[in-house]
Length: 217
Ligand SMILES: NC(=O)c1ccc[n+]([C@@H]2O[C@H](COP(=O)([O-])OP(=O)(O)OC[C@H]3O[C@@H](n4cnc5c(N)ncnc54)[C@H](OP(=O)(O)O)[C@@H]3O)[C@@H](O)[C@H]2O)c1
Image (cartoon, rainbow, N blue to C red; front, top):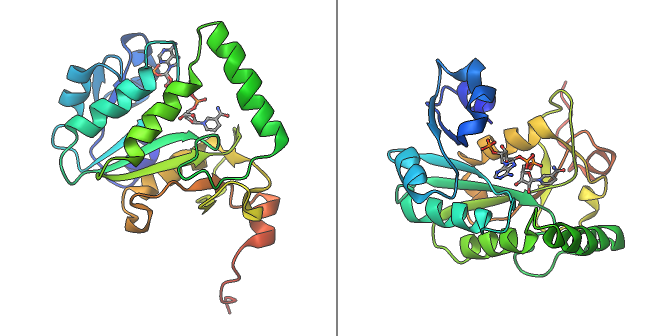
């Protein structure tokens, strides 16, 4: 996300935990880094002050309401007209109209239960975070990612309003393109108060169901 934002000429302020600061070394002279947990309200308040947009990675790590704490701090402290773009996975549903495969349902149910049992990850808290965002009248977008893979960019992912749409069937997006979609959403007003479910634009299902465009001469 930092790379895509810098490529667009944006001034970037990044928040990450103290232990993770070294991973941003290659950007150190080009961005402002605020060290701290993203559910630390004072950290978020300082970081988002004066920002036109806020990109938030919602992660359900731990059992201390990390994702909902992060989301709430951003909702509370971002500038009134700021574009707020949040990341999560397909398992989040806004209106209950998503249609999930048996595999995904089992993965969320069993994986979520085991992770909660081990007190490592609390998926319910990511659900809570998104419910708070959906209920807000802010200029938000919740980007719902498919499974991710590493690799070079293929271009801006395509999206659908609901999981189950045939265009999403491939269930795979390059991680770098998930980030690209997040950054592009900052300036796409059509995505305000939307929860797009995304998939790679070169994936088989995206190619199969792409809306035909005028043939270039
Ligand atoms: N992985 C997938 O296949 C997948 C699929 C669909 C959607 N998504 C969504 O994509 C986003 C990124 O997912 P990801 O899998 O890349 O996440 P991730 O590996 O967990 O990393 C995201 C951030 O979580 C923080 N983090 C890691 N361990 C932590 C801990 N123990 N306590 C607190 N924070 C911790 C780190 O922040 P610091 O910078 O502070 O270290 C890290 O930058 C999420 O919103 C996820 O829901 C992921």
